[in-house]
Amino acid sequence: MSSPSDNNIKLAALIAKVMQDQDLRDSFVKNPDDVLRDAGIEIPANAQVVVAEDGPNHLNIVVPPIKLAES
Image 1 (cartoon, rainbow, N blue to C red):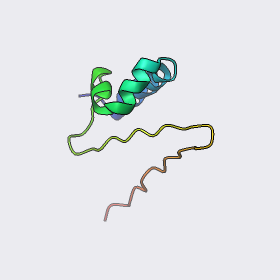
Image 2: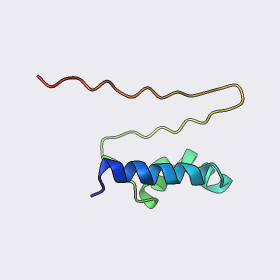
Image 3: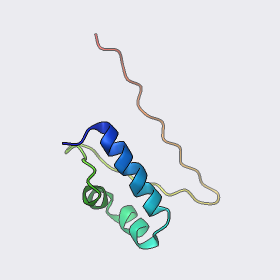
Image 4: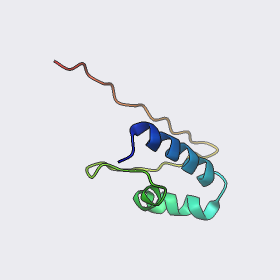
């Protein structure tokens, strides 16, 4: 099992490739789960992966969840 840090490193490398390879980008947009798994990135079974593309007049910003203090 990969650590979250390992997954982050693999994801950063994948995103760099996606930015340079149109075929990989197309595959990633259509089937992100498959591309992530092929890159060795573990996805929790209950996680939903959504890929959003930026455009010249559209910018996506992801706001991470707030980690609530444990009671």
